[in-house]
Image (cartoon, rainbow over all chains, first blue to last red; front, side, top):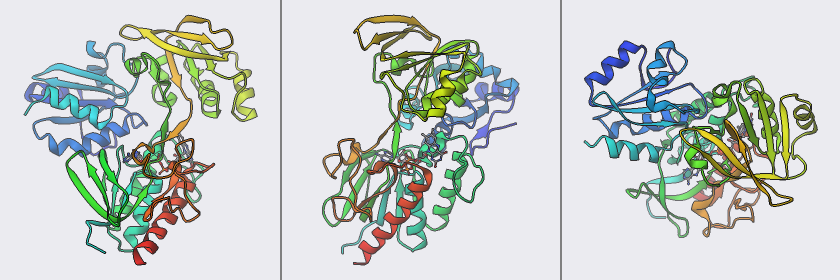
Length: 115
Length: 307
Ligand SMILES: Cc1cc2nc3c(=O)[nH]c(=O)nc-3n(C[C@H](O)[C@H](O)[C@H](O)COP(=O)(O)OP(=O)(O)OC[C@H]3O[C@@H](n4cnc5c(N)ncnc54)[C@H](O)[C@@H]3O)c2cc1C
């Protein structure tokens, strides 16, 4: 199962590994179709063309394989959806919990994923 | 009149703004919707809308998506997640600047900026959002299974969400600043009779504390002024909504609650500027009323353009 967004989805743990190993800059939003998640998908859909050097994906929080995000040490203590994780060369550089504005997301992208 | 980029610029992409976009687009007016947040506005916070006539049940997100599709199909342009950094409402031509970069002009403007949930604005609130503090029970309730939590607020939403959170939490304490609730009788009685719910009335949270996660809050007893710590796993905040009218403050006439003052055709205090939906003075804030306002504001704007 995948989320009903216009973003590309991460559908399995294998897919996830391939994505973060083969791309320098990756952002994954792991959530549901809830009120705190939808604005984050929407913001990213809107801004993704401004960041062609970043791979944007989402992942269904309740899929068993989403443990690759849920169980990240960087997400320890998170108690709000979505869990949004930013990877550089396969390593987590930033993770946020719950809703974020597009300004907050852009700040993180600009700081961590310089073109 | 001089040429402008658009006939009408609509500020806000909730049901009021989207409806105005649909009506203006169908009337062949050149319309632009600019929304700071996601298209759909507060509808995105609603899991199910069941009181919109003609539609038995629909998620707020879906309803917003359909309205957006309709507006675009009639030729309305939409820019979401765009921050308005400057707005000029006086003069015959109105201007907005987005993200300090792009400026657009129009002959008329509709302000449909709606409302947003109020925050407590106390120490630690931003730091622990998503780490123990939540504003959405349906989104985050399951993170608090068998946990001890607080619900802040005394209206219908706080009372109903407190009851719904008992599905997960072992104990729910409702913290409310007054000695009585503002909710409907039925919601109050249901919360009062619930074995998992306790109350701290005439109390308010002064700050949030913890490490990786929220661990405790400092609560003031308003009657005595005493402040005591309370260990807690989570806090859900439901203390109502406030109009998002900061960008027009000082430019349009607002009432003491910062709601935009309008007449019955939704004219504001400035010629050519109309206001619709939750951002204007009104007692009823619903999708149906926002949609009605969007219609009236669009038709008023069209009339203004033709004269
Ligand atoms: C939890 C919840 C449940 C609800 N359930 C129901 C229900 O079941 N049925 C019902 O009828 N109603 C319900 N409502 C109420 C309903 O959602 C609102 O009354 C309605 O959405 C108001 O519409 P609006 O267009 O005026 O404003 P909003 O929906 O608030 O939309 C305003 C838009 O303007 C944007 N904006 C704000 N400031 C700016 C700015 N400076 N620049 C640009 N854009 C800006 C916002 O990002 C937003 O997109 C519910 C509300 C909530 C919070």
